[in-house]
Amino acid sequence: MKTILETPRLMLRELTQMDLPALCRMLQNPEVMYAYEHAFDDAEAQEWLDRQLSRYDEYGFGLWAVILKESGELIGQCGLTMQDCGGEQVIEVGYLFVRDFWHNGYATEAARACRDYAFDKLGAERVYSIIRDNNMPSQKVAQRNGMKPGKTFVKHYYNMDMPHIAYSISRREYSHMEKRITAPIDKETARSLRAGDSVLISGTIYTARDAAHERMTRLFKQGEPFPFDIKGQVIYYAGPCPAKPGEVIGSCGPTTAGRMDAYTPLLLDNGLGAMIGKGARSEAVVDAMRRNGVVYFGAIGGAGALIAETIKSAEVIAYDDLGTEAIRRLTVEDFPAVVLIDCEGNDLYEQGQKAYREI
Image 1 (cartoon, helix red, strand yellow):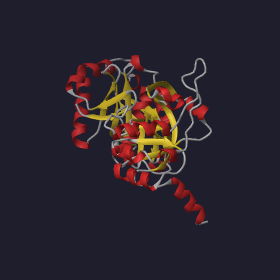
Image 2 (cartoon, one colour):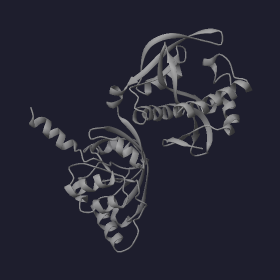
Image 3 (cartoon, helix red, strand yellow):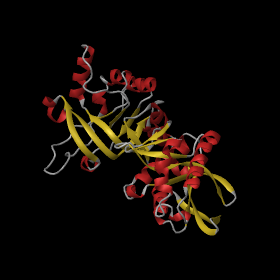
Image 4 (cartoon, one colour):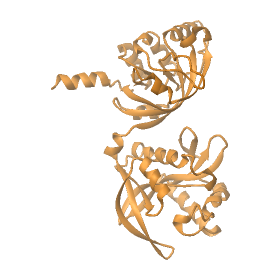
């Protein structure tokens, strides 16, 4: 089973013949298939699956199985297909989910990942979702995907005329959107980011400031392992305030990254995936970033309370004696950041200064 994409909660992989019973759970449910005006019979469900398998061979993509990570259950299908849009062949994000898993944001989460795949991996110039004019839930997913309604046309299906709306988003529009990424960060994701990109980070990140950096690099040089597996991980340069009753964490704004510069190249050379802080980095750090394909994000200074709202859990995992500077594992959802230095060494601070010097 070929895995295509992962999101914080979902894994998208190619469908196989073994998925037919789970597909039938969707395709033979009249409520799920209302936009098709009928539930599929066994032959139609098999034909649907065969079509996806043929698409994998012909295009390298199609509708993929959506697997809920926490249970391993197939809860839907989402992916990319070539579709006729009023006489034009276009690449479309399509999605269909088991009724029991509606209204959990899974369709939006999967559709966004497929949209990103179309632009970042396939080089699409425009991505569509072609939706019946009476299918309001699917239209809302397209809107949350940054798509806008365009031309309308009629599809003839099941002896019926079905008006459709072509929602779409262009590459230019996509390039100005906030990108959603998952931590830990893989090299492919890091390479796709450019200085100046706005991102929303979800997943697991770790806090560590200068005291923690000094200790873990010193102990590592003495032969001890790092207090957590740093490969692909994101370190947030922050020392959070104590949490008030009922809160996950207190104010958690970034500290100046330069304090960590003496220790950072060692961490980067041993697999650290990204850093979040504020302020410029040394030449040695930028060289190590280029060498290892790592990005440096900036968080908004002075907005620690707002940043704390994106933190869903926090746990001290090492150096408890350091108090607020102990290493914490954070689970974050849509943590806002900007790429300050990308893995090619392009520096947003330098770009901004250059632009003003040229005025």
